[in-house]
Length: 247
Length: 179
Image (cartoon, rainbow over all chains, first blue to last red; front, top):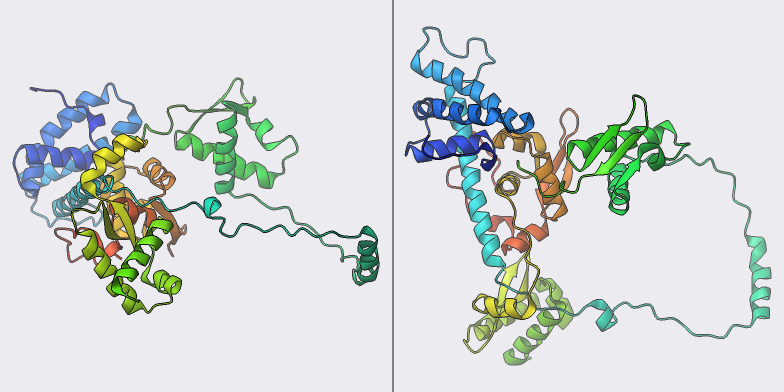
């Protein structure tokens, strides 16, 4: 291979396929896909050793699809395709790749628009504070405390003690817990789960809170570990979490 | 009102607002009819075409707004030294494009097009205010539907989603064009 191309530089298997087809100056069709299968596999094989499986996973799935496709294109089968119903026809993959390419090109145009837009600076406007719009006007009145007491005595009997109500504790949602936990982790770098939910947290709080931890871990926003089995769950903010989105 | 003083009045209002104003808002503020405002804006746009002027009037996010002329961007930048926003990654742009043209759309549908997971990218786009949850799909699991925001239109300088650059070929099997 003349030069090295790293999988991380591609936004997924379709991106790599588009690149390979563009480079070979081919139109997107089943035959051109079959032609680039070997190159595709070479990239994935080269990357599979070093990169983390998470990143390569999608590429591996595509590799399997491509091998099936290549076999179909090279060895036309006597039976009609799609006999088993579930299998993907080469045309579907080609359609899919075309569709992807449409959006990949559209993305470039949107980026162009954003770039151009950055050259327009809007008229500043005046902040509400400067203009004093809707600023509360504080009335300044002298009130005689005695008059206030008389007034209260008049209206007080009108107020009945409210009937007792049963308060149902508000059950937080996972979304709310994610926001809350994210806020907490902005203040402190690490946090124990117990400490976060409080010693006496009810199940209705524990479950969404725990799901929130899992979700943030999944989004790579936090690291989670235990020092011993059944030990305290420790949550730590991932400093690199915000900008590493590779796909 | 003379057309000149109307132009000046519109200029004042747009300058003070600093955000896109609809013709209706302008009509309410001036007590003039929508037609008068339309004509006044046309006149104002004409006035601003003069090379002696440094501003342009543009239709953005459903209204009109005043901006500095793009030719002067380097100077404005040198003066204000604005914090350059981190550019969107290619992955984020692709995802944004799919949402823009196919909205409302679920995460799974986006992933089907891109062939990779997009949850992190969605999170980034949401944080930047370019997309938002717009509802839930009436399907198993009631997945969240995503759509673009007015901030998306503003950051692209578009007046509405209809102004998105048209897609080259939309296959007949997909009838979900720009909403």
